[in-house]
Image (tube, rainbow, N blue to C red; front, side):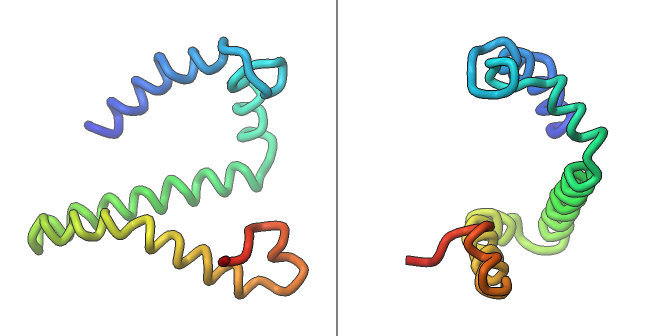
Length: 111
């Protein structure tokens, strides 16, 4: 229910507001919704990436509910606090496992 409410608020107020605010997107808008929907519908890589992202978020939330049901909710709170560190670590592995020459296009070195 919480996710559905968030989608409704975003789709009903935030995205339309961004569509009409000035910005650097196509047509001088903050976010061109028509162009975004067109890219999702006509570009397979964008559609696949969006589907994978939605599946990963669903699995993360299902895992969180499972952890809360079988373990202590405090453990879930600690995992959520470490989420940024885990994502950063996975990104580092992806960056440094990418063949030389390609890594410069997908990220930056750890300095």
